Image 1 (cartoon, rainbow, N blue to C red):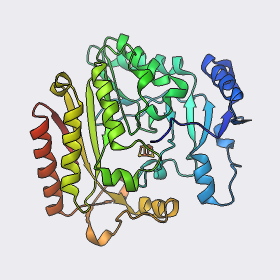
Image 2: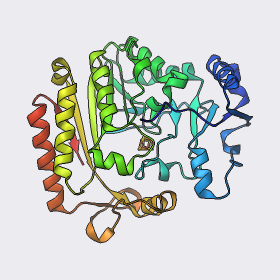
Image 3: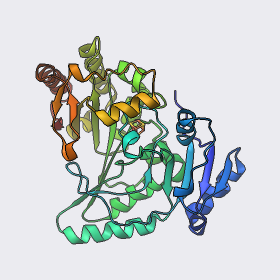
Length: 342
Ligand code: SF4
């Protein structure tokens, strides 16, 4: 069982202390056995302890930087939402295939932003531009936001902020089960709470530092009983010995846990395992012992944006994955909506 995240090292940007959340976090960490440092900007966080990149990477994953979000322009987040709402970046998990390894490069530490009101102000402007059409915001593009929220409650505030909005919707996804503080948030049905789930084997070998399947399923049950619309991202779907049983059991256990009511409004997203050449290089550097299969010869090449193509499963394997997972979903959740398979 993975414990709620507790940083070993915390940096504060001085301006962050002018905000209530910054001051609260400082007080909190001062009372605990946590090393505190100050930095003018997160870009100056360079001298992390550790003798080599491998060690520094691990230290960074347990380092929290408390700062301000300076850019209040949001990135787009198609197709699942209109915008990415920036609440935090980075994650303490150690999933071998995590996309953050390539997107965050040399800055894998976790950052939380304390100027939430300014971020929400910006969200209001984006909503006003599109009103009366609704605007969806994705909160987990650059982090596993649930995994750090027990410390900051920023996500909880965002849930309640969108709960009160007329045209805003919030969504995020997590591999963590630390959801208790979010259960009484006044979400008003405006937040879709998604869990990333997978066959036991995949979680066991490739997702160290995250909650186990049974814990995520249990958390999903709590979230459903708290009335949130639910969603599941099955990703990455990975072919391994016994994969059909593994994924079947995953759906079966989910079905056993969720209340009947919740099953009427569930979404699924299916994403097959893929990798790019640059991602393969960082994975092998950060997780040299991984047994993740990354053999280009066994895969099919799909051209991608900016000339960086990805390696996905062969057509026949892809069809197998699609038909099996779809049939399991239909068997256990006939009313569920498959948002996409990719
Ligand atoms: Fe990356 Fe998500 Fe795993 Fe965190 S939980 S390491 S964000 S894949």
